Image (cartoon, rainbow, N blue to C red; front, side, top):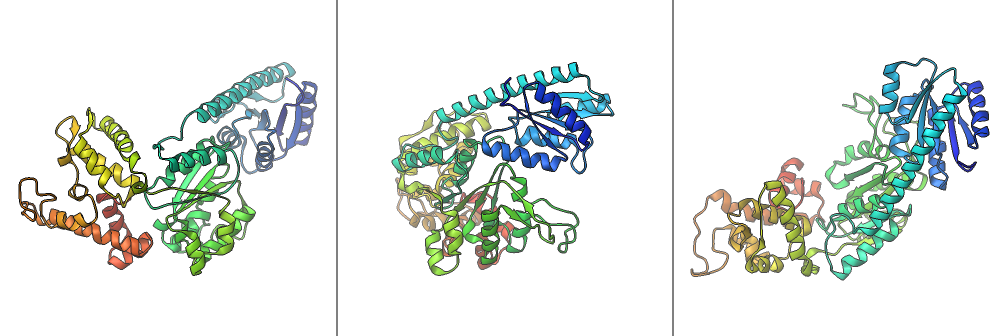
Length: 476
């Protein structure tokens, strides 16, 4: 291998580091030295970011702070283009096995023998070459495939696919807008899977589902004793996503104070955990989503203008399902096939009447609601075809006006009986849909802020989430 291949030597003993560096230079490698795992990680990140990743890392087992095993595991997880070798002066079978389990490609004991080190370096080079070829293959396959789980031929969705492919390889912040249930989480995941960070962590959090008092701790972590109940240090989502992607959903629900903290971490890539004065630096690609137009919130003074300009780098707008009705049959068939596998059933599809009902329904819960409706139909269907009768009453009505009629026990359509004819059912069943309608109205009035909706309805957040899942409005 040529001198362009870089090797990182991590050892707190300067004599060992210098000796290894001289040997590696003679072997045609470009050595660089780090006295600690923390410094090694910094150099690894800089190399990855600059497109000149280290091919090999020789890591001493005993290091100050993070030890060699932890470093090897971090390299295997977040720096996959680098092949780690563990080096120790106290070799045991147990430590050798542990090193290999943590991602090391070889294990050497001191004092080093030139022949053994040369063999280990050649083995690491071959391993690094295979890793690079595998990464290249995965990248080519991802480019050929359409975004995972994203289905539809509507021109607006085609534009979404184009934006996903264009923005994925970059480091740019992405802002997604669209109603709840339109698939923002899928888009965020697809961007991550197509990025250079695909082998890193992907972390997502819904800002609207966490009380304001806990959101800061969830995002930035806290130290023991920071507040009542903080019995131990906790790593926040930003640190958990280090080297990968963090998806912040419902960013519109963040308070002004939280918006200011987010602005700082997006600009400086650093923060302090709750209760700590120590600054933590992170390398995170951030994707955000809002189910409300942020421009309107900025105009109303409830969303910081500087944060909006900072996150509105690349904007992806997801259309509601009612605006791309041609995709409904394709999506329904996809969900039916998925749930058929889970249920161990075989389905031939939907009858024309059932498809017509689905195409006519406005889907206030968008794609998520469609999936829940199809799952319900798959569970209840007695034959191998989903029929009209397998769909919920409010879908049979075709619009929100049918919710009330269906809910109080009246036939959804005459079909041989007079409109308004009573259908025998329990009071509990009869009250389900008016409750669903009330929850939907409250959500819309509160801009889909779940915490405020729960407060207005006089129920706790857990009860609301259970009802959202029960009625196919949103996942809990």
